[in-house]
Length: 203
Image (tube, rainbow, N blue to C red; front, side, top):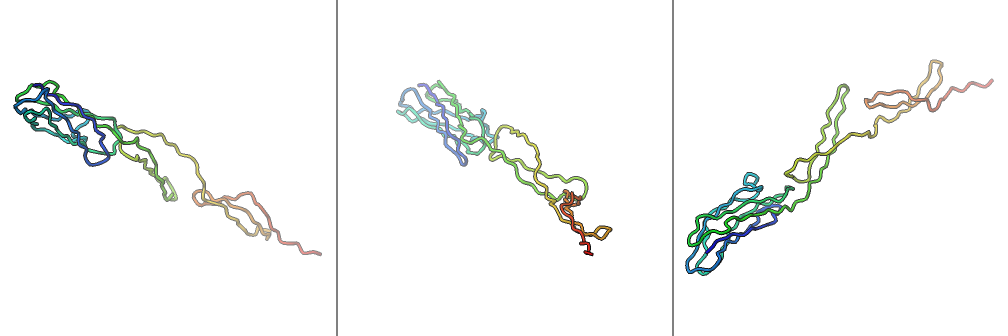
């Protein structure tokens, strides 16, 4: 009798675990039971990254049957990544020989490519020097690849506004002019938009 193990592919899911069920088979039934050891090992899927859970032990194929199963638990996540693989290998058979003793487990990614976003920031400008406005660029979900995105600044609106100033000149005449506020709250005179004078008495 010859033992073999199949390959299995599962969708990882976004949380919890998914069972990857491998089938261990013999080429023909026997009056004797068959046992064989199994052990998982890392591929591109690793225990360190919590992609799946290690499994090992002995599987038994009962007399007059041809198969039994081994279950490996795959961990779900929301990380965008390529499909990953791990292995399960058979060893130490009893009452059979090993033919294809290498099974491949494939974890199929079901997560979307992350979307980048940037937040809004408000700072108090101060009276001198500079103040850092720190913007945070975030991803909608994690990924196993580095992400780059270009950025640039652009002008917006000024908030100094305009103010109408009124007063008298040294000749005692009324004057009115606009003053435009700069970003630090100072005022600079604009071209007078109107002028008021004291009426000259009629003779």
